[in-house]
Amino acid sequence: MLLVTTIDDVRSALDAARAEGKRVGFVPTMGYLHAGHRSLMDAAVAANDVTMVSIFVNPLQFAPDEDLESYPRDLDRDSELCAAAGVDLIFAPDVAEMYPEPMWTNVHVSTVSEPLEGRFRPSHFDGVSTVVTKLFAIAGACRAYFGEKDWQQLAIVRRMVSDLSLPVEVVGCPTIREDDGLARSSRNVYLTETERGEAAALNQALRQGIEAIEAGERDPAAVEAIITAHIDASTSGEIDYVGVVDAASLIRPDQLAGDIRLLVAVKFGRARLIDNMGVRAD
Ligand code: PAF
Image (tube, rainbow, N blue to C red; front, side):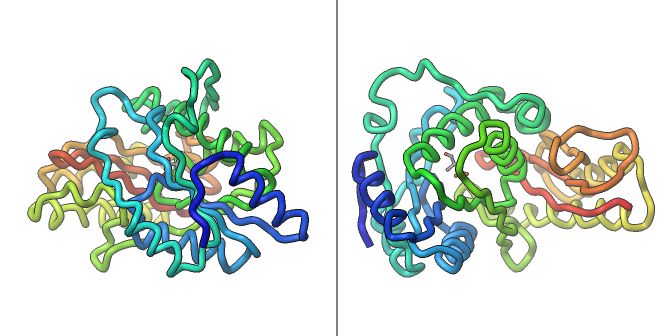
């Protein structure tokens, strides 16, 4: 496995692989890898000839009051995990390599980036779209793997790739969960023991929402109320949002139909947890 830190080295390695007819898989990450990332790497390694993982804590997607400085980092451990997964190349640039000058370019994907997370973290998705566009430009033609846990991010990247005709096939991979249903996240380390016990309620609440839709409920507000009630009753967390929306556009319809996504964000002290699940309403 090769660890490179410059854009030129990534381009040379991946251009050479493509010149030999090899398919490139790409897993963009911010490091501190866990089982969720491992599932993305496994999917990439299984379906491609060469797999690259990028590890870059992207300052553009953190608001000034967020955890950029304290975001967990451990490149040695991440490298071991990548090697064990069969990854061929790690791209771990520093900020100066990615942003040698102040960025005058910003990628904004309208509509899908605006509700839910977009309301609570107004600059976050522009930071994500901008760095992902840049990473795609560096990686070149590839299949890129994203976790469904960050559903809104996945929907934004899909739309951005389609709108801009980027030479990337976006692959969404299922959320990896703990035994009690808590979605794996690098930020779970911030939970206290009590909060960790309560956090499983997010997944339980989403399941209750899905059961209601499967039983015929078609009013998104009624489903949101079921989810909210369970989280309020079972946790000390503060709900940022509960959304029951169209899975691709993230627009909340009057009546649920087609592919629906149920999304929540809850603040627990230092940790802010997000989770989502999907269902079809036919
Ligand atoms: O999901 C993440 O870890 C990040 O948002 C991403 C896609 C690597 C961009 O920095």
